[in-house]
Every structure is written in structure tokens, then in C-alpha cells.
Length: 292
Ligand code: SF4
Ligand code: SF4
Image (cartoon, rainbow, N blue to C red; front, side):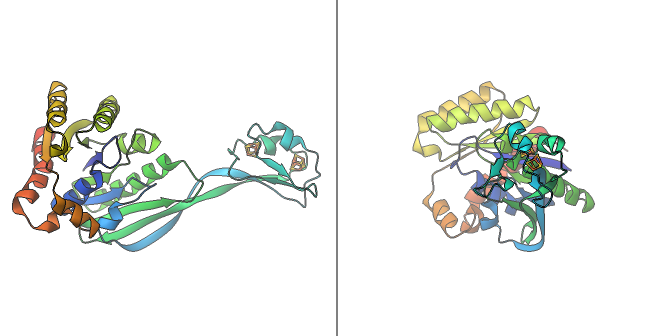
């Protein structure tokens, strides 16, 4: 079983469009949506959720008002200003400020502080016409999406192993933050989708550097090539100078945009040459790095 992530560096390059197309073309795989801040793959894969799990991560402090003797020690020692005292002198913890360091619990002379796990969102397992999908939603205010991505990937890998699947296909997040690092760490390959704009090219280089740092095999897709043919050529030249295969150059095609608006992938357009372009992204990538 191998894990392949589709990433982009810059948002809006068409990463999820490529993933949605591959979801239809790659056989014997499980899908993971690792873009938990903007989970879009589910829009294009028609999921029917079969299991929902509350996702908990980390701990925060809570104060038992029955035990609290208002000594103020917890507030004085909390380095994150997470202890709140209301007008009536009642002590409580601001759950968004609390970092779970447990100092308040250690200094409390009354045993009034306990630590509780935080509900950080939900994780879903859904059937789709293209295989099982693992996806999740972070609760508002929870920002450690990297941990949720790691958990989703573990669920996807377990499912693949139990069902003897060959691939875990992951829709990664844009950027190079902790979500992307969690998407890329330990995967076998990364298909990086870029477009011929200066900002996309800049972000392409950064995310490729990140992936290579983690010893991940990288292939490049240039999307919307005709919006700037000379910059497209520059991206190709740069990729070749890094010994990275350019897997496809996808034209700017209004039918693809219309398909996305209708919550369809480019494959549903039914144009065999276009479908073949997306199919070759996968076959060229696999043949280049993982030949049988
Ligand atoms: S656990 Fe740490 S951060 Fe949270 S309230 Fe206590 S001292 Fe402050
Ligand atoms: S240290 Fe304990 S007893 Fe003192 S104010 Fe905080 S919670 Fe109350």
C-alpha cells in the first residue's frame, strides 16, 4: 500500500479538481481529505456518511467552583492569561486561551483544577461511488488541524491495509503550514498542482522543497497552461532542472469550470482526450516512481 498526496502550495490552482478526477480513475484505493479547514473533496465525491466520531485532542483545565477557595494562585501562575475572574470573584478557565500546561493544577492548594479532553471536531467515514472517504471538520476556534490530518491519514491507511487496497489518495491542504506538513510526512509520493502565475510558481518551489525534505517522490502538474504560456514553459524548465517529471499540462477549459460548478469532476465531461490527460497524470507518476 502506498500513500500519494495531491498538494499545490498556492490555493486555487485546481488541486481538488485533479484529486476528484483521480478519485474516478485510480482503482483499489481509499480517499482521505486532508484539507480539514476547507473540506472540498466531499462536494465532488457524493459521500454517504456511515460513521461519525467526535474528535478530541489535548486537554484544558476546568475549575470546580465548589472546591475553589479564590486564592488567585492559578491566575498568577498561568502564563497564557487563561484564568478568568468574574465580577462575583468566581474563577474559571478561558478554554480558547488555555494551552493545557497543567501549571494551575499543580499550584492549586484546594485540588479544584482538573484537566479534561477537548472536543475539537468530528471525523467521518463515508462511502462514495469511488471508494471509502475519510474526512473531518474542525470545531470553530480549534487550530491544530495537523493532528486531525494525521489521524485521518491513520484511519485511511488502516482501512487500506484491512481491505488489501493498493493506494491511499490524499487531498492535501494549500500552503506549507502544519496541515500540509502532516499531509506530506511519511507519504510515498506527492503530485503538486501549479499554475502559470508568479505567486503559484513561488509557492510551488516552496512546497516541492518541503516534500523533498521529507524524501517524498514529486511530480508536477501545470494547470491552466494557456493563461501564461511563457510562464508555463518556465515552470516546465524549472521542474526538469530539478529532475521532477511534468505529468500533465492541462488547458484552461470552460467545460472544467462548468463541471466544477455542477459539482462534477472533469471526467464527467465525457471528453476522452481530456480524461486521458488526467489518466496520464497517474500512470506517468506511477510508472516513473513505482514501476511494477
Ligand atoms: S492549564 Fe496552563 S494554560 Fe491552562 S489555565 Fe492552567 S495554567 Fe493556564
Ligand atoms: S489556585 Fe485553585 S483555589 Fe486558588 S483560585 Fe485557582 S482554582 Fe481556586
